[in-house]
Length: 298
Image 1 (cartoon, rainbow, N blue to C red):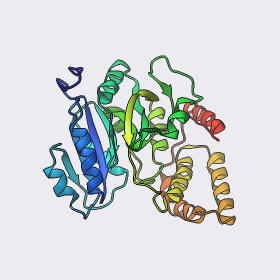
Image 2: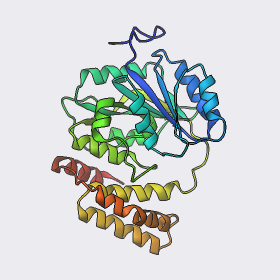
Image 3: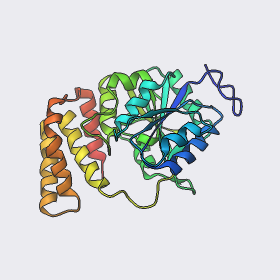
Image 4: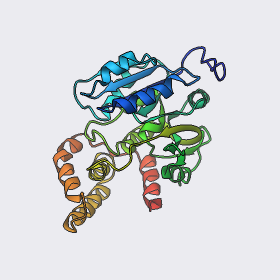
């Protein structure tokens, strides 16, 4: 059922917003303010990954009336799986505690999912900071070398930004959600692979817009985790030559003492047995798409 237009809210909600957070109460409350003001009036599920700063009490008191899931520990990206399990709408939009959605975008996304039954995941256009600067990922996704699909909107891709994406709930569950081997950091590519392997479409659609306002400065250790997870993704889903080649490159980077390379390699080795147990190479058409993206990468 479609929304009734700006300001009136939907006759029946189609999109739940899933938010994961940990020890960032003030930023989360700002996000909840933004979500509560949306014309779509989406249900909100907040997964608190073991915060110790009063986050849970603040969520309970907030006007957004979010469903609160307190894990008591840091579950990383798996918190999004918990949020999806609590959603009752057909579609789920993902936010972090520093991101939210532009008014009308959730209705636009729901209309696209309604009209395209094979669409499993939609990557939104992301605007960053108070000046709404284009995230560099937007142009990367928009220039995807994957050919258009007649039964999908936007541009087919095999990646997205986790805090600026909308999923069909049944597709997310069918693909298994986020993988526990990766935990957090660069976890999106594996989910995109798994969606495509199950026949679901993953596309970039700039008519749907998310806002992202991260704290200045990078997070310590983030680059090493992302390199680790990129390599683990290769071991989980790509042909052995791709995984072995990635491992050799990371080992060479470690020998050159590139910052974070040794941590990334140690982290990969520690998780490699679990990755090998869960290894499931991609179907040939999805592997072909992944290779097209490999060749287009800078």
